Amino acid sequence: MIRSLAVLITCLAALFGVPTARAQTPDASGTWLTQAGDARVKVSKCGGGICGVIVWLKEPYDTATGQPASDSKNPNPALARRPLIGLPLFNGMQVTGPNKWSGQIYNADDGSMYASNISVTGTDTLRVEGCVGALCGAETWTRVSR
Image 1 (cartoon, helix red, strand yellow):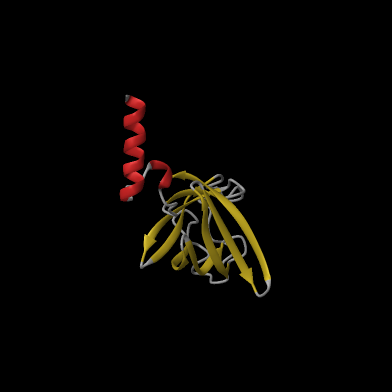
Image 2 (cartoon, helix red, strand yellow):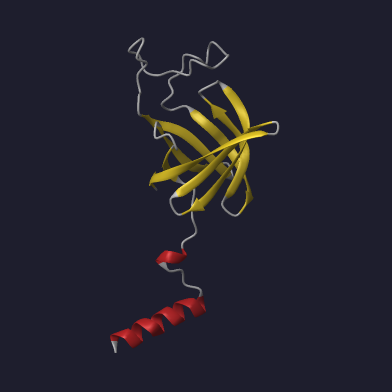
């Protein structure tokens, strides 16, 4: 009897379009661990797109100075002193398709901005690509939390 009821509820849910737990659409919002495991980035909706900010670093202090890690590779001296935690990596990435966004991403490793595409490739995976001209690189980030 219980099994028949479960089958009936599942059929009705499918018929009337009621989402089930497995049918949830992947969402980029949440905190993501970079592929190297050295940073966590909080992604949230903003301005019709998504934004990403560094919220954690594996090595939050500069070993040479003992000070909080800073954006030292930035060519702008005023920005080179800002802390990496709280640094926006991308702002207002615009929707280009289902679970896909495009815009510019900042690389704190070299202080440069790159053309970027971000896509949710699974419930807990985010593909982050950066390109300069025809040369592109990509990483897969893993969800830490929503």
